[in-house]
Image (cartoon, rainbow, N blue to C red; front, side, top):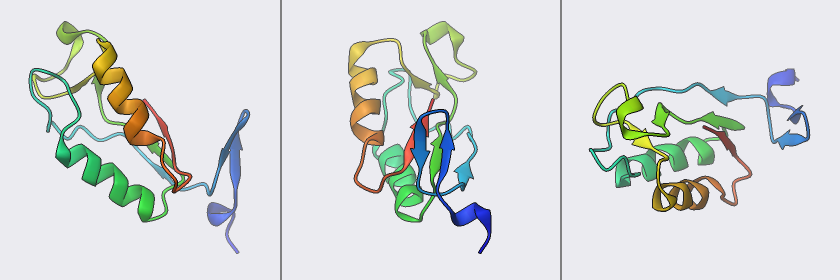
Length: 97
């Protein structure tokens, strides 16, 4: 069996496999920078599909730092909590931002 489908580790972070989804700019948020229904479905589908690690799309820590007005944001507590809630799930898929 290929090592791709065996458990992996990055430092102390265990991964269910070595399949990694790279970041892709989806441009599906708005000026609020908040996660939308699209994001929830998009990332959940990848997790259910078996991806071991998802690297989230362009996500800015300050509104002026976005590459488009539709990028995700992490500049307030509401956004941070939404990301935590969205990416911690029972499929054992991990996420990096």
